[in-house]
Image (cartoon, rainbow, N blue to C red; front, side, top):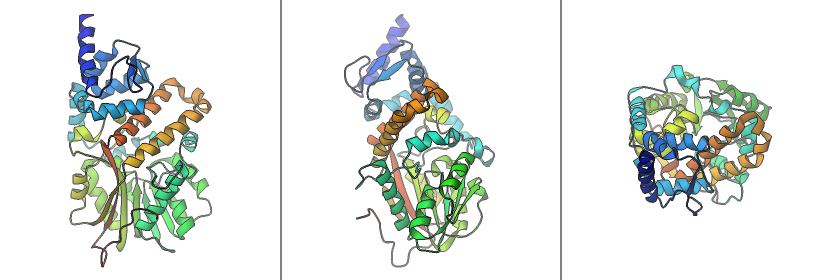
Length: 377
């Protein structure tokens, strides 16, 4: 009992940095159902926090706000000072966890197309939307896709490579609106199966392959939400591949979530790594810049990370609305895991602890300068 009391005191003091009170009345306060929660979080940090939530040891009325407060009080860094985080850091620092032989180990995109159909927008766009003039998720994603097309200067007849194409949302939009042909690569057969149905009749080719096996020459290259899976040991390899595939006068648009730090302890979270995205880490601005040195000219860097908060909240609302349709197939633990994933990420973006950038590159510089595109106005 003395040990539990001490653990409770320590965690309660840490939570107070984020104005969070165990069993308090604020919307972001947590309700503790199992007193072992305190020791688990103290010994296992963010992994213990997430796993104890999955197992029903604690609840919170507004989980997204809990994480906002948590990040705002810098408690996330304090919770990382434990043996679990040290092991996580060393593993990511020493090993190349995203090497080619492990490329198809990521099963996140194969958990069931129907779940994603209900959670995402009508085009199945699993990346951040642009909410400047949008009233709903469909509009936000259409705006993002249009923004990408304008940034890379699409014209009829161009051939586009989409690295990490998902279900083909960008390719379908670009083919329909701009008359281009597209090749998309993904490591998910489930995405290809549904993507082919959605893109039927359009000049779009899906390929099941690792990005390192990509061949051909393209007028433009896009990669929306895939670079997070590459891993910092492979950033240079990735950029060299894009350079090889891009025509000399073409543009490359990279959209990626980004970390505020290059420290491997801050670029990935043990809980996310174990239960959601089992490969990769969030790149920092320094790492991206270093990876393109002597390969590309950086023409533009557009950060609209705050929009990911709105996107994630919309996904969570859709997920919760349609959950009764999937409950018997996935179960209560998955429900809590998925909500934790979506709402913890929403809180992190809300606090600006992580970023979302669209970066435009050229090989030798756009003659006369690149014309910036920031909105559809």
